[in-house]
Length: 265
Image 1 (cartoon, rainbow, N blue to C red):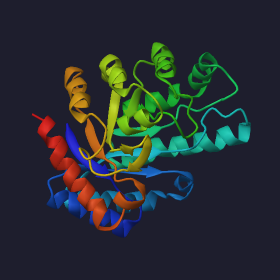
Image 2: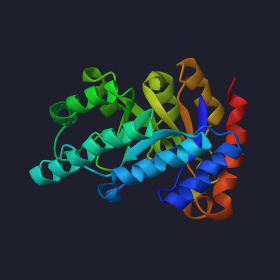
Image 3: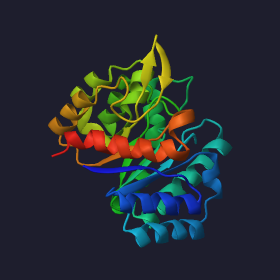
């Protein structure tokens, strides 16, 4: 396993994040985009890659969030698939090991119908992703994806076992999943791991600090990652109003990396 963190997307901050990675022995950066992905240009991606190469840092992951690749509206679907095409292209340009996106969502339809819609549009992209030496991770519970429950992933995997999950135990816990039971049963499907902490007080989310300072049972998480032979990235996600910016952002990365390193051989 390698440790990295989620970077910001403007070039000066990417340079600062890459420098931090190099100075602190971290391996890679993840980049995520929502609607602004449509404005990303090949020239900008080349500049991102140049910064990474300058510091000897990998692009662990490139993520595309919020676009509905199976939308029933033809124009919306076409716009989303245009961005999915660019995701694969830009991921390859950056040397990413994993690309993350949604499975699409037709909320009025059943899981089986959503899997069928996935099967209509994704196979050519899956071929391109595999040819480029990357893997696909589908995110859970939000952002125009039907993968909102463990059962929905199981239904998808029956037809597309090569598709993985971007696993964020904090997100799954917050959405009511038995995240440890899920990892116990389906840890072999984890393609990419986010390390984000949640601290609950009185049943409410009070803070999102560094890993080990909250309620996520990281030792048990890593038990199942090891049992399933996970060898991908552990991407720290500085998150929330306090721990995602300023001095606390890098403190979150440093403390989280130190904490999870105890679980690595």
